[in-house]
Amino acid sequence: MKNNRIHTIPRKEIDKKALMELIALEFERERIYSEKEINLILQSFYDDYALLRRYMIDYALLSRDKDGKGYQLTARNKGIKEDV
Image (cartoon, rainbow, N blue to C red):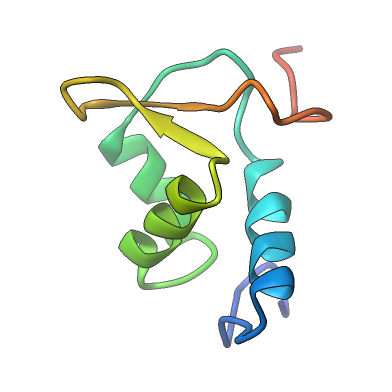
């Protein structure tokens, strides 16, 4: 990352997951986000925000509600930014 922007997605899974974990720090624990809110945050890191969203779900960092409209950090994420 350079200036908080991703220029290239790492090829190695371990590096890709570590990058997604860093991005997850931008989300508040226990808050439910709309897809639009998720996209805006992810787009600040990388133009292909849908790809980042997919990776975050695949790595179980984000979960979707049953109707697919709400997103939330998974309970496994520790050290995520909390409401102040």
